Length: 331
Image (cartoon, rainbow, N blue to C red; front, top):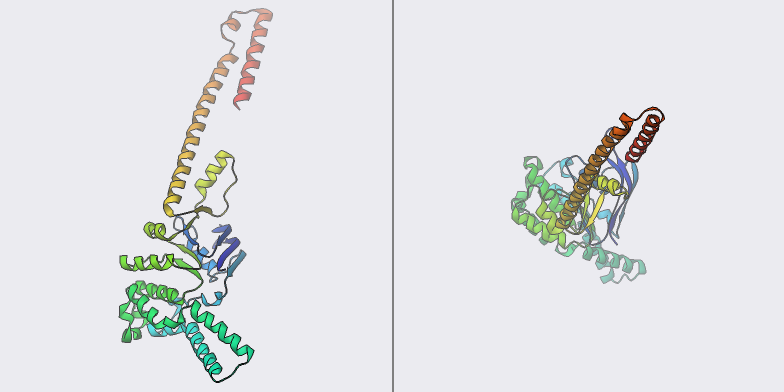
């Protein structure tokens, strides 16, 4: 079953760790979304999950029957035309189609070796898994739905350098969706998309059969797609855990459900933390007042002031002992 598994991932760009002891597992049919402030390491973690970046510590496991096909060439490193990029990116799928046609021809010509039939079955499974039968149709449809109709026909000869960053980003996203990887990893996929393209992306992601791991600042998109939220800002959760004596959160805080459920959970955590803080401050004020009263007791009051001889020492010792006991209790 397709899955993304990160075990004890740590990474840093400087002496200060950016990611520390990250553990995460996204299974088949799950759509996990990373959230957190800018600079918390969302993109870095996604790059590690997609194996574009090696962690300093920990292991990355991508499970699935055909995980070697989920890699999509980075468009910023590519030179040439849109057609060149599409041909390069979709080459693995076209190779499968060519091999399948060869295997079909072999069987039709009477080649009945066991290995030939097994190879045919393997290729047939890949043809179905990646929907290669309708590759050209899907290519035209996805480009159009993502606002790239200009890249049909002769428009594909347009050089990548002449395209805007938004167009290049949408082209790489289109290739990713066309490749139909079993494990889908997306970093801010709604950037540069209009409302119609976002609707198409929501529809596509929700139908994805494999594991999906993504990040986004688009709250509506997260609400419409995510089945589990991973909060990379664990400060609040750890403050609450410290105040309640619970276990500390390491790396990520996991909330199963939609974004609205996560927001409700975080709002509740903030309220609990405020209430605990208010209760602690009230207790501090009571202790401070109690301590002030203890200092008054140490002075002995009226009886110490009016006593003489042994009585004066008795009242002084008793007042000091009582004040000291109260202060110890306050501490």
